Length: 233
Image 1 (cartoon, rainbow, N blue to C red):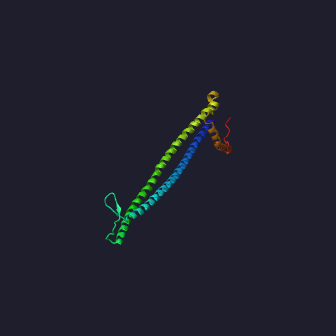
Image 2 (cartoon, rainbow, N blue to C red):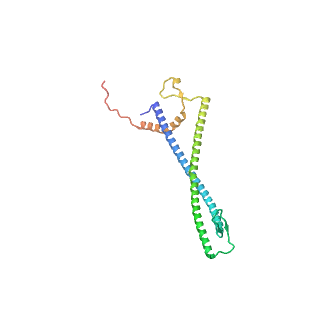
Image 3 (cartoon, helix red, strand yellow):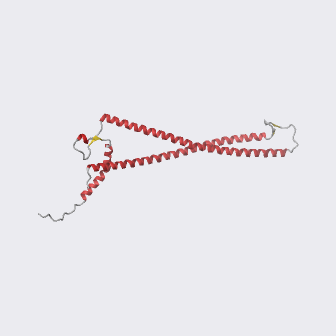
């Protein structure tokens, strides 16, 4: 069945709307996929930087701990007062205790001190690592919010630019008109502003194959034989 001009126009419009909707959905899907990939890569970069910064700070603390331990070991050779402020001194005369026993006691006290300080240092280093990794989520959230603001601003600027270009084109050339299929013979009434002419031209190219196929089917279909007897005169 051959379609009328109005029906063909409606069909082209509906097909164009479906094609535009599908294109918008596909474009949005690709943009979303790209945003997710960029965000994932950004998170990896921030995590790597955080781990490097934490490791560098841990190394600095390790060097400070070694210097501190060396200094404390030297102080362990002295006798320390219990009252504050602490005073370290050496007696003029040797103590009655065996020197080997004193050295063993000093070494044991130093090892206990070092083990306690090492445990404190390890806990502090772990807190530093967790703190740096915690900055990753905050920095990533701040970065994503900034991207959303820029994207919204860019979309608004693009829409404003397109509106200005359309207004300028209409002022310079005026609105383009076309005939409504199946309209009346009054040209003034049938001429309407065409804001989708470019889209219709594209859709005509898309649907030309379907229309040609319908015409080939109509030509190829044989007409039924008329074998009924002629009417009585």
